Image (tube, rainbow over the protein chains, first blue to last red):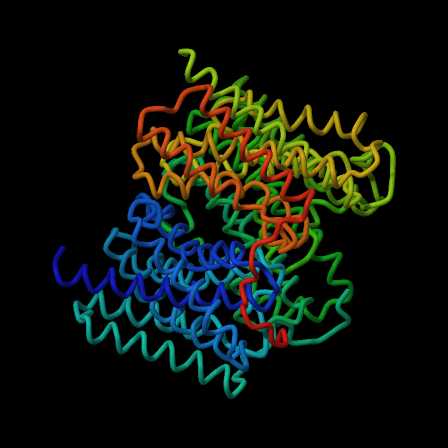
Length: 211
Length: 211
Length: 211
């Protein structure tokens, strides 16, 4: 394994860990037990990547490299012993979710480009990877997905990040440094957007009754 | 690309567009923002086809042909500028959903048959394609899926359409004309069934308490 | 087809039937119609296996062998004519769900091992197969998944079963008899756990407000 793919694996595992913590935190908030915490952490953190790998057409990394099972286990333990005691669980959840989003839109787009997808499709798959795990997490926990919360710009930073990485890759300027800058940008926009309530226009220009 | 596959692509894209509008309309009804509208339109319109292609074992069209990204974009814009102002959003949503259902049960079944699936499996995959996108749309929006609404016969027309197309294909009488007739039949049955409240028998012959 | 794979197919089809009954029972409880019952039975019983086969990278059995369509049909009819009249639908649902869980965690793990997955990944895929169909069933029916009910130890028996089968397989002691013993163990633990309210520790050691 060369340096580039080591860095890619490290970024991927870190993203998995961030989403796993978001899953365990949601499990804690919903009153699930430790087994449910481990399962929700696994789904949130590995689900997006499994979908990505199935679409690319390679065996899902989560089911070929057992190392991917470590982050959900760590996250479950961490939330149980440490994070469930913190005030403002929601705030912590958003920060971890933003970390996963930032890393996955980079690694997902790069994996898609390396697999030979065209730039548009690669960016789309990067966004899918980034939002997919969190979407699965919220759906199976029977919550309205954060993704669709109009008080927030959840997906926009991931779309921007996927676009930036695609341009970097196509212009051969994607490096560890530029990739980390892109991830930092996505993370910052996501957290700032949540903190200051940046909003996108609503889907309906005219608000009628909801029937 | 010959005439037959051009017609197939056109029908597929039109079905994608119909489901995309249904997704954006639901986003408008639920108070999502424009980004949520685009994402729900994409999931509703491309989700069923991605599942179909993964099951057949080919790269999902939505991730190989960027043209599939156009209908969700168009639908989001259309709903924002035009359709969110209409009265009776539900009625419009049902009509677009029916259009997508009608086209997808045809194109899904044909793709499965062309990929060499046996007739039963091909019809099943056609139905899966037709109902899959709408199911994903309703599930992620945290609604009870239209598919399971007992005041309606949602899936029956798609099952009939998939069966008819399978028979047409196996007997070598599937053409653009017979295919469009089958789609019209599915569309009409779906819309009439909704308009006049056609119902299927309930799953439980004996109604007990719901516990 | 030799004796071993015949037994494997029989166990798989029986698991499909059990989950299909659980799907139709839930449809009956939710007031769905017969078509919704058939669809929910199909999703609950075939969904886990389709995900398993996609991850392994083989064509999903449900879409290559039409025999897999028989159990959902049987289950829909059985629930309509017989089981919807029974008292305590929930009790019956748990028993059938446990039967599916027990058989699928065995057959899923074995299929994964036979496909060459490493033992950890095979056990993970066995658990995914076992809990996947029930998770899909509950999610599309807009219920909080049984999987996450903290009054229960839903997934633990499946995890144990997958681990036991992996050890049996790796040590070449997996036979029809030991396999059935493992399935019986999973089934018994699941039903006893439900009956006597065995619980796992909650995900949050410190219970704060749920915000």
